[in-house]
Image 1 (cartoon, rainbow, N blue to C red):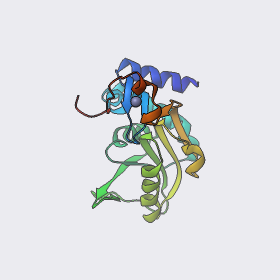
Image 2: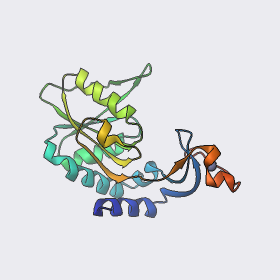
Image 3: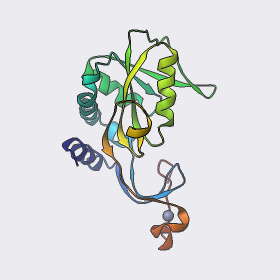
Length: 191
Ligand SMILES: [Zn+2]
């Protein structure tokens, strides 16, 4: 485990954002751990620390702007951009598709890094990359606080994550917590 990973997990623990129990993930799989990024990012000093850690990993790509998908990527995108000394902009859904709004623009001179809080399948990162490319900019890399998938190999871009979650996830029928009759919780839903 890298120092950045240890530091990151410690911030999640301190802010109650590392949940342990029996969770139903958005993929439908069950897991005994869940990282709730919004809970760590609610503390600006922690958000700033995580942004600086991501910036260290991406600075060599010489980005000129950070682009994040709304809403989850905005806070960490802002803090990563602050540490890099570049602009932070975001893409948001308009009629179901991510788009630049609010007067945000990219130029052919822009070197974009796409920043998200959590990357699982890479779908929203790819969609954000497409927004930047369609605007004429060059995407030079991507980053996330948490990588829950195998995204370094599938994105086709330099990719940095502070934590690579190697947490087992189970189909409900083979879930050991289900077998013990433990009630399953959907993280983020109102308990
Ligand atoms: Zn289960």
